[in-house]
Image (tube, rainbow over all chains, first blue to last red; front, side, top):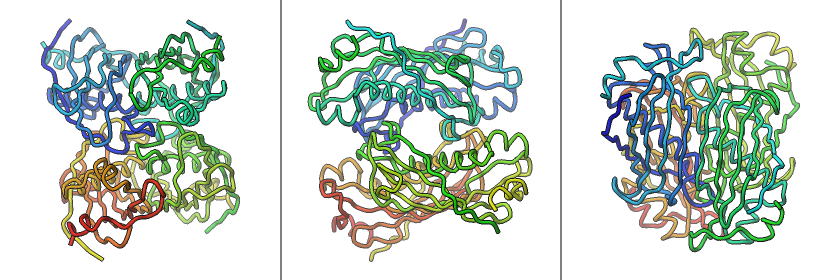
Length: 138
Length: 138
Length: 138
Length: 138
């Protein structure tokens, strides 16, 4: 097991596409935002999804997610979407995630936990994360 | 607390819009599917979101969701998205949800639990579900 | 050049996911709806996207689209999305499309024209539609 | 009639959410991207959608769009989405739009024209753009 305490925060503008007729950000939009933050956290560590796929013949696939919606956010809001790797074990990587508004330490909008699996493209079976990637996090 | 054991199942076709470059249904799409099933379950009981909003000045808002992705689904698949109310307590309604493929009792793709809150539009505070709606479920 | 005058109409329910904070269906949602109708029109003629890809090593790719938004539609509306092949020429198939609300001949919400190209997956070059498919339309 | 020749270019990263099972960016995603660029162009001129709505009781609504898809773009690509106001006439504002990849003057992915109308929220009728906004463009 490896852990990393550095949190990555991605700034996102809320556009019309992200909202719904209740006048707030639509719930599934937060899952898109959370994945963008995970993707950028990995990119900041040198791992691009498309390159990873071509090199390792494997994909990062969401295996489990849990989110709690605490307060709404609205059109034109600036959101700060956090992603932090809390555990890597075998073929499974766990992220703590949060969405805050107006400023990086602003009001909590949503928080959750995402577990991502490394899946072999041919076998569609879990595959241990490459040692090189894990060593980045310890 | 009230409970209902009747499950509602919505049949959904997977379109290009629902998939991603990994060749499978994109994770956030399942949250859209699950909400469609909750919406149709409520409609089957006589509750339409838009009418409910106009009549009770309240919205159904997702408060918490948890989902486990078990197997992928693909373009052109027929999915069976289940929703079942398992509990109503104050301003909170809990749904058990599942996504199966090819047939209603087919392979499990995803399963989860969604908690929906009834929120007053003006105060943005939780509001007990109307007695009329609860009585539908007991 | 071949033409077909039979129109396919797909009934679609407007869900929260399709709307935006202006309280109406979000503009890009109509492009998703129009593609669903094209897909179902093709399926009704025996052509499934996934099967077509596997068999012909080619994809249907949107090459050009034009849409005029005439009236808004809202949460819970039933929409009737029409698709009609108006021309097939080489690697290009043209569809006339429309979105009406409440009933198949109801108020016009949106109308447009979509040109879809048949693209070889390996070469990423246009490829004539299979004779078999064209003959379906004449 | 007023015209402006300054083009606004928004840089966008392609995420999994934007792609489809054909391995490329899904067609409706480009309409989301084009609207983000129009929104940021307006914001750069001091007009925020949410503020505009609250102040003028009017929304910017897409009235017509036309797009030509020239080349595909893929997961992890950086796109440069251009928006330029080419005409303002009464309640109608016209934008020339383009999507290029890898660099601001890179290969053309998509180009189009969008016409946006200013709609009064209460009457749902077109409303002349505020003089203040028009004067920003001349």
